[in-house]
Length: 90
Image 1 (cartoon, rainbow, N blue to C red):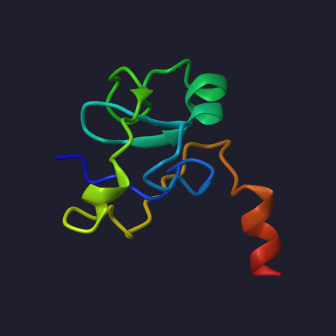
Image 2: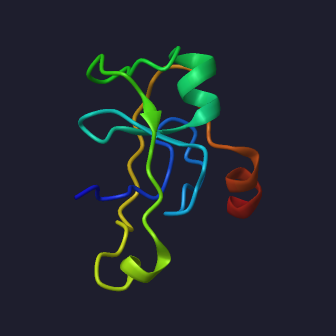
Image 3: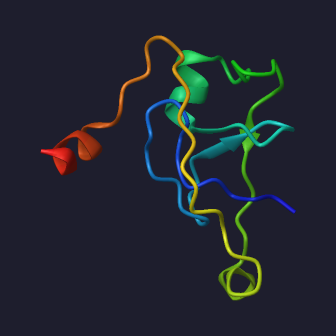
């Protein structure tokens, strides 16, 4: 079962379980669509796997099988936190 990571590990954008723009590879490296497409050409920078749209877990299944709350961030050289996160930190 997918763990549904809560954020893009490049820019740290929130990716809730219902996010249409979440992308994952076979190892569940998770990115937003913008980072996956614009920076990585839909190829995972961690493992080289293809980045595809992450499926939506229906809300009625989230109670029994919740999404992860552990945030993952890796330095990919050019990734920066999204502006909404920079504003929250101020």
